[in-house]
Amino acid sequence: MKHRLSDPELDPDRIAAAHRISRRYLYKLLAEHGYTFSGWIREHRLARCRRDLADPALAHLPVAKTGSR
Image (cartoon, rainbow, N blue to C red):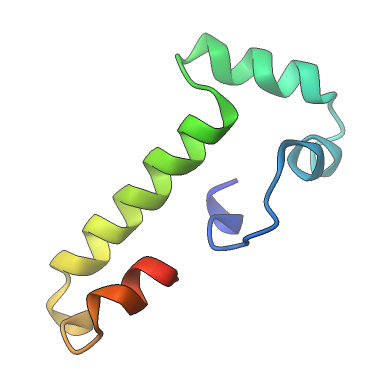
């Protein structure tokens, strides 16, 4: 899922199919770690934004560009 974070069409069905598991099992795996699907995506996308905003090599990019990626 981390490799597809920037994909706007990332959804539970695609992730489950890619790993040959049911959507229900995907939800169960995430719940065991205290996440919902959307919560996991949001947390990891925000973490990536924080990382990029703190990276001096990306300082030339506008904040909106970082957020949209």
